[in-house]
Length: 339
Image 1 (cartoon, rainbow, N blue to C red):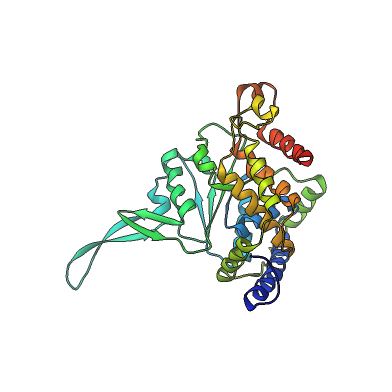
Image 2: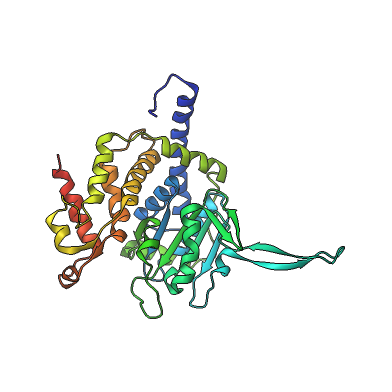
């Protein structure tokens, strides 16, 4: 639908659009009380939250990834759980397990399902690549379908539901790389870099004292779900959808219109889910500003985080020192010349 006045429903959408911008501004302010810098990462998390998508945070230890996620959960008044992924973690440690209970009055025994930590609004999967693929796969159904199946029964996850996973990019010993099928479930991959010198001085000053800033709730779980539905209703122009689809397809070397860069360096590109997330990300980014119509620049802004982890490079790219982000950045630059 388009945002036009003239009906109660459309007027309500305009009010909700203003509310999205207000919530976005308040969330940034609350997060800044504890997190110094990392503005692009906060914007990425906000985009994922509004678009109802999952995010993978990649960065070396000590960059406040866990603190950032817990602070966001606190500001959104969402139930938060943290799962520390280890090599001996079992799927039931994530989803839950059945236990036998005895009715003291009748003596009858029956199974009862005890929910695991995945039954929360925000699930922090800390160091997700430290656990074997079998346990990693326990998250697949929850991330895609927002339900958990155990012992023949299916249990819905209360909305909103986000998986925010962290991964260390430099330590490879004792880790299990995420398979492409699971990487594709993450809407965004957010690369967390070192802070600047000035930011690090501020971090050292503020975190070594005795006070921890209080974070105030900016939106309830129910209202956040309503705002997510609004983002879905934000209109996207045919030209914006065409740009998103063409950009996603430009990462596939098998495509007839693939650029020379892709044919040379890419072994495998993003699928249709990449196109969907480019459009949804652009909508969420526009809504966070209070804009009723996303622009082509919104697509380009979310493209690195949407596409980089979906691009698998070949040996020639590795020999030339290219990274997926390098290739995606060049592909985005080429979009300025597309007609």
